[in-house]
Length: 119
Image (cartoon, rainbow, N blue to C red):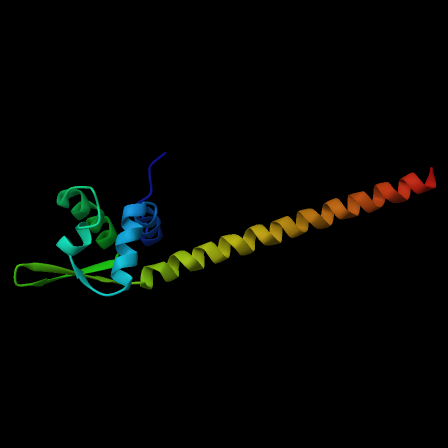
């Protein structure tokens, strides 16, 4: 079975799946920062932080701007809207399905209760 190309949603969810990347996004939500500033709190190499940042950029959650020799990063929350909408649709789908199942089970229980009373 051939694999499908990754969608924007896939990239967003992959980016959000890692606690280091979520921490980077939390920091950037407070304002833009240099790559070296973002790397400071982590006990990993600058190269590893850069790999995390590349995944965030691929998901378009982060935008990089070069200012001289500095790389400044800024948070872009728009891809989170797509993820939120997908989650909302999933929640609605499952809620409707579970409500329908609950109605079927309630009807079966009522039917059994009536049959027990008739016996």
